[in-house]
Image 1 (cartoon, rainbow, N blue to C red):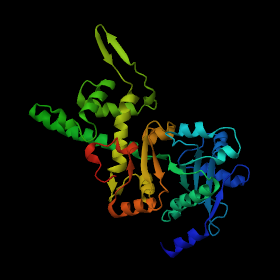
Image 2 (image 1 turned 120 degrees about the vertical axis):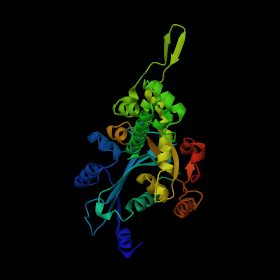
Image 3 (image 1 turned 180 degrees about the vertical axis):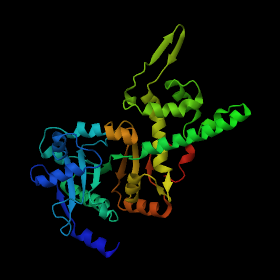
Image 4 (image 1 turned 135 degrees about the vertical axis):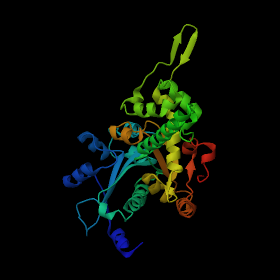
Length: 355
């Protein structure tokens, strides 16, 4: 860490943002610059700054005193680690003040971190903010014992679509070669590392593809429909004595997309580190990958970026030294601490650099 960064850290001022006591100009900046979960309404803003929620921001006197450099939104929950943004809304929007019930909260959920200054991208303000906020929460809530995130996978959809298009391109090349020999081999149209044969057959059925090699294109087409997850195909169709079970596209895709999400987070690397920037941020800070969550963010942005999938990262503060050990292990070997809620979606041969 250079002297310039040290000076910035020492001079940072942590403030809690509240609807009642924070100047309107700062609240407006928090609302306008929110990058993870755009505000839906004024009531949404009041909720995020109200009971069972916290918002903290760093300010610096030598920059713009009344402009936040980075801010974080936190949900305070009782005993559960949320599986979705709906969980956060459901369990933290009770009409209660900051009384005894709120002080008994045991789980802090960091669900949005936004940096407002692109010029400070080389200064790890987000990491420092989380550490300071954890210290504040531990002091304010004597029962607080669990610190987790509910985090997006901002580029997961683009990654999957890119892989599928590569698969289709290879398939077309294989088709052209086979046309010259008047034969067709379906293996040339399918990337077995993306979809297993069983998955392809299930997708072929639910997407109503006449040929197995049409599955990738049909998959991309189906996912262009913004309401694909509301596909409510009948559970059973009968024709005479034959019974055909049909699952909705959403149910069929759940294990497939979660498998791909686990692969994306843990196996896709850039210079030995996770390709996903959010994952890299949290595991670099010592967090463990705790659980993948399906249909966790069905907002327009959530579905567009990651088909609604989110991930919990957990910061284990006990026993002492766990975070530091995880950080050291990651920096030395690239190994990431992973719990069953993520690792169970990996293939058996995909877990070499996870624990």
